[in-house]
Length: 310
Image (cartoon, rainbow, N blue to C red; front, side):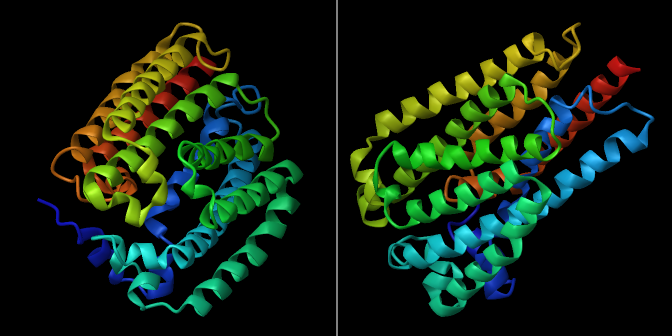
């Protein structure tokens, strides 16, 4: 069974600054490729590299810049939360909370990452730049106080997920499917709810000492949010595979549903079972079965799209 300090021990093998940048969370920035995969069907043709390589490279650049900006927000958050983190059985081992990384170094690094990343995003695409800058501003406000407001704290976490998906579409100048908004919104709400539910269960009566907003929640409310958002995420994706104008009209994209369903329920199983002491995002990005499911989903989805266009 995974111990509560497992993720912290693994992270501590990295240099303190790199560990505080949370590279294990960078995969979530892969959402910038969602529009390329599901909304750019008319913008590229299989076999014509000249049509899709520029789109891919723009999204790759955006992915890297999102990694830098999100790491800056993690540093700001950990500076503000350092006293709360020292009360947490797992987060007390974070570099800033443990003293391995100084507050001054973390602040300078956060500022440096933003200075390096934000101008290139605007050069890539003005709308994407505005989204990324807005994300940095909102997450800073979140770290400085908005996280204390119940429900709003969850919605702010959702906004970052949706922002990644939208910026990926604007960067390659494609019409974004409305289903991209629907699926990412419910998926984001599910993941954000699972984080709050996990924290509440792990910390018990002392939850509010670590995160004041948890004093406004109850176990039943968080469980209801988790169940409703999980059902909505899976249902919205199922409808997308049939109703979206950007997928094959024969409904073949529904073949990806088993991968989505497996990953979702596998995540819930681990969150409430053998890895309940771990951080939810650590589970999502390190479980081999979930990773295999994601790879299977990507291979199946792209194969269906290529066959349909062939």
